[in-house]
Image (cartoon, rainbow, N blue to C red; front, side, top):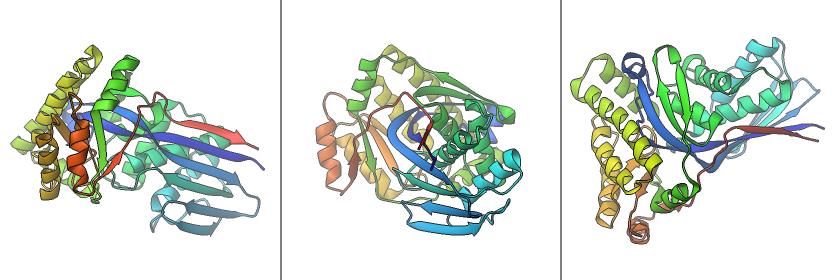
Length: 342
């Protein structure tokens, strides 16, 4: 029996988040600096011969079984996974496939670490390995974007699909007509080790529906709301500045840039920062952090703080009084990977 497996890394964004969302990226161009972590989405495909499709979401404890057809109904909690299967069948196979697909992710939906998009990339990677699909890195990332934003009509940006596919530390540029350029950054290992040591990644244990925040952000751009559009331009500029200080190894300046971004992020749309999240930010800053951000669209999920001068221990101690889960992590240099096992 042949087993096909794949995995792709989740990511944190340092600066520019939101400038990859249309229509802003179409009108003005976007820029983002992000990095992948040793937290992953996983997919396993086992081909079947009985004319059945079985979908297992291990972390959600969901299992669904269907007759093998070309188009699955995309309703329900596993709708996105079924949408991926539909697109692969339509575009590359044109006949029903019989298989068992199992998935799980190291972070929950709504984490702000790009878990949904990373899962799409991972599943596509498993299908590419199984069916020998003609998909390069840019092709696969763009297909993942199309499935989410066009096929499934899910609100969001473009960075997550490319981060998961390429992996590493990347400066990404976004233009009209979904054009994306991924620029890998050559950062010294000792700089990345120091950066990881000075960063704290935590789960606020609050959920958020990112689509509502993103749609509000999109409406603000469409309506040319001055304060929101100007804030997004500042966020984009910070991605360029963050790239420069990272390449120079001027890590302590990253905290200052994150702190500026915190102010601008809140002007992009309402409900990005809740009272509870602001309280966490204030406590971390009071304990020695020099800057921080919400990962993803905002409203909840994971947060990131930069803690210079060995202040991480004091900041962690302060935040743990709020029963916050601190996640240790390392940066990764590789993106989507897939393989077969007999």
